[in-house]
Every structure is written in C-alpha cells, then in structure tokens.
Length: 310
Image 1 (cartoon, rainbow, N blue to C red):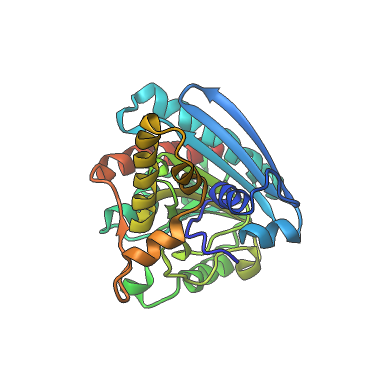
Image 2: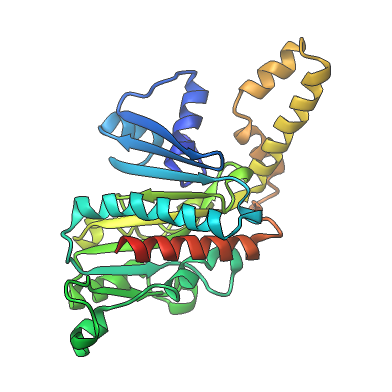
C-alpha cells in the first residue's frame, strides 16, 4: 500500500497510475464532465477488491467537483457550484434511502481551528426540520423530510470518539442516512478549498494528516453514510514537490532537451521530498493565508447544496 497522504480518491487514482505508468486500473471506472470553464465533475467508481486495494479506498462512488478561482468567486459562481453539489448529492441520497427517510447531518471538526472548522460552520446553516415536524406540524409543508444536525466536536475537547457519540444519537433518533462533512488533506495545493469530494462509503476522520480516528460508515453505524469533504491542508512535502514541478517547468522552457529534468518531473517526488523535509518526528501541515475566506465560500456552497438536496 502506497502512502498516498490524500483523502481524495481521484488523486489516489492519479498517483497510482503515475507510479505504475498505467492509464487504467482494474476495478476503477472514471468519467469527467465539464459544467463550464470553471467547474468540472469527475466521477470515480471502485467496483471490485483490486480497485479497493490499488488506491486504498472502499468499493463505492467518489464524486469530485473542482472549482477554479474560488477565492474571487461571485454569487453566481457560488450558486452554480452549490446546485451542482446538490444534484450529485441528491442522486446518492436517492440510491440509499426513500424520499421521506430521515437524515442526520454531522459537521466534523474543530470550530476554533480555521482549516478544520468547515463542518461546524456548515451545521449552523442547515435547515433542520425534525423538531418542527414533531412539535409544530401545522407550520410545515406536508411531505417535508425530517432533517436534524449536530456538530459533535473533536476527541481532544470531548474525550469521546466521534463514532461513539454518533452511535448513541443513531440508536435514539434512528435516521435512515447520515451526511458527514469534514475537512480533508490533499496532495495538490490547487485543490485547497477548491475541490469537493462526495462519497457513499463513509469517512475516516484525520486519515489524511496521520491522525486516524475510528471510521464513520455503514459498517460502524448500520446505516448508509454519505461523506462530503473539502481539502483545506497539504503536507509541506506536497508544497515543495509542487514547487519543484513549477521550477522544472520554468527550466524546461529554456532547456527542453534536458533528459534528467524531464525524467524528474515525470516521477512522483513526494516520498523523497518528505524524507528530506522531516526533522525528527515533525511533519508540517500547511494551509493558505486566505483560508478564512475560502472556508466561508465553501461553507455557503456545502450548506446550500445539502439544503437543496434534502
């Protein structure tokens, strides 16, 4: 198993293909759709155990929405992205529950740490209806789906594994499906708060930054779990590796015949860079200075997408 150090199935697929110098992986099907010049949807489906073992992700569906220029995105771009997210999310929800099945939305992360605050921030914007249906049904449209939401905090502040908290909630309110929102780690600086991954295989909190917690999935909770993740951090090794690629690009403009540089750029340099940068037990995780603004934009996109879908 490779040390992919990314939560994105799309990136894991690309890394595996690059390392093994192949164009197709048995057990993995992929399609791409360009929505417009700034919006692309890539659907990766893992269909068998070989695909699962190749990129270290469970069998299931992984949809990645890539948004260009999110930092300067206007209201129209944010709305278009939320509609795209809503469409993809609704299709997954319909595969796993009926039109009236109760949904619990869970925002993972730490509200006090900006790169990890996406989940709790989204929860504050979710249109919850379960209590209204139960106590004030006359004020809500017939056929409205019951939706509840919670941000359970993190192990460091609660002392309780998130999956343990969710088991108690699931056992008591008995939702038909969970939607979990969390920050992810990426292997590309371009994807920081500019990509959204939706999957129907659950999530392992902290896996991308080496702080793995117990998984939140149908296996642990006995109901389907749809995960929505946004990359907000990369490792320092990733940052330097991408910087080397940019540096080589510039050199190649002047020395296109340099075989060594061509070969270096074609290889995956992550492990070599990581080994060179790690000092003792330290490994830096970095996020851009504009993360506050990016998180706010992503919060609006994800919250709207979920509200429209459910």
